[in-house]
Image 1: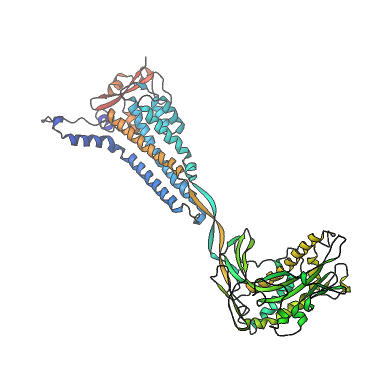
Image 2: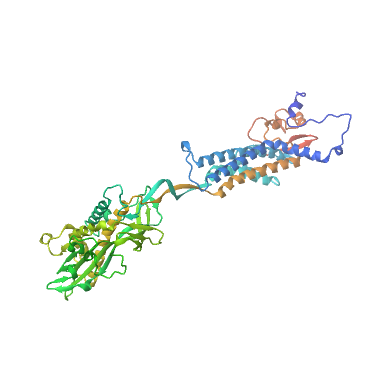
Length: 595
């Protein structure tokens, strides 16, 4: 046994160099070489802990690199339902596991430093061992340490306690927000009329007749419904939006506009009737609708009797660009005692240019009319063709073969011309369904449901109602022009919600601080060990087996310590102290009683 014991103790204590015939003095060594050897002897045993800290730092760098790649970008779609949180949890968990190992080894080395040079309660060995494995025990250890050991104990407890929340806190580094982005694989389409009527459908053999019939059907459909009904047929043309939200650039399109002029001053009373010149209308009650094209008969499209207006329009191009013209004569209901009042209005449907701002928000289309104007830049012979300009003047719109649309004037007039009275049953008068609907709409609010309104109020209401009716017809015709235009689509952007990642870098500093504190702790323990010149033992269990001084073992009764029974036990008497002392080149744990 005496021969084997030195070999086992070699794990803890280096052998004394054997004496030789030559005495080597310390001054003969180069000073730099001595410092290098000392640094190597003190810090080289900590290479494994330094490697763990390096690996943790590399993993932190990898985590930061990954977060930078996804910061401000859409949430990645990885197989098996994996997410960025999974990657963060994986890397942070490895970092936490790696950092525990250097802290544990440092605490176990600090145990030997704690006993060096001063008597300490031997039960502190167990406290250090538990602190290397438990966060709560590390806090208890920090409260027991004194002097220069306090900062190192606090550092170790901070890292171990903080490691409990590493996974949760590092996953809080990223937050998910929603933003609206352009869906590049989806197409949003609206419609514009660039030329008319030739551009409606050039594949047909008779595009003019197709355009004429389509315009008439659109106008007739708009008259079927009351102005207070929300009917899709009379609403703005719906754009095509593949998502819940879309937007388009501001664009212009050919359209049909309405111009209304008050020609009441031309009314004259003949017998019991109120009449307009040229038989443009006669009335003794109710509503009368007359059109010059209808009363003139099947005359040429440019016959002045069929187009000459009564109202003095400020824009002289309204009549040449007109699609249809009508005169509305109506009696104004009143609850007053003076004579019955009448009003005459000239209405012209004509071409114009509309400028739109269209969008779709939450599946609700919004069509904003920014401008409506009539500006002619060029005109052909006999006014058969025109070129109109948009608001900004940067785009031209072509109107051609207008002479071929002359039948539209008469056909539309035939649809709406007639007489209507609000207190006479429909079968008693000769009017069609369209005239009946127009009458109901124009008198809406003045006859029913609240009759007997003041004259001036009814005048304003009926003017507004008439504008609504005629503009609804114009809107329906505009929709037909836009929807049937070849190569007139306006490309927009389909918008969709995207979940994107925002990195909160302050949270990642928590993990970086743990790695930094671990490095500082290991360096502090290594420096303390070097200053005390204690061997670097760390968590070696063999060191505890051979730490008791051989002389103490020889003078102590086998199985006893200071006369007390020894053996395997979890508890150690408070009065049993231990001091790590140095005998020449060997360190031993001297055990004695406090008494």
